[in-house]
Image (tube, rainbow, N blue to C red; front, side):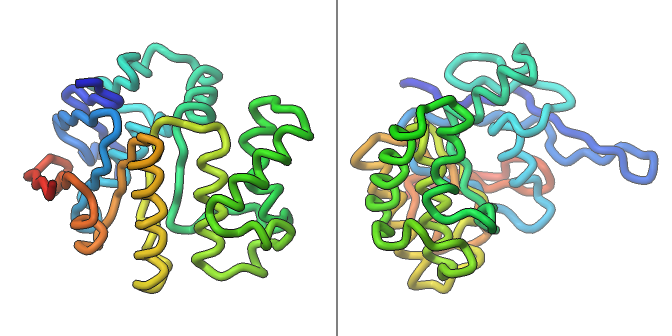
Length: 229
């Protein structure tokens, strides 16, 4: 068993009105390489906070997050940024595309940050857009694309540096059911054909049941687990 992510006694508190509010409480999670799994819970249950912790977007109040065996609390800000850019592909509900830039430019962005030469990154970005079915939309800006097309651009951007791990936050939340199913099919293809690991935060039972394993979170604690395969 190769663990991509492991949390140990993870806790996160925020100050609310001068008093501590515990959002995650003693969360222990193990995610294996190549998994296609979901974390599901009601609003305010802590699922997005957990995603931020395992994605190195926020630091825990106590406990540990290990990514590929490395305790990320030992990394400085530059090392964390490098980890996020090269090891993790983030896909969000709101797409988070740069509005003034076309699809090609959006997909190129992580490659630019990584210092990939101009010609190579343009070729890579074009191939990625073709792989998600947008080969004929490379010069379109986000406002010229449908919601499903924008999400495909976001997926291509997440794939840019070929990360082994993808973290997805409510990625079908702004899509109709048919488009949502198409996006899930695309992600499953990446999982099965390329061995990528996927963690999907969702409140949608249909998304959860399309994965192999579901962790249920409630009041900041893991409340149960289901396996579908």
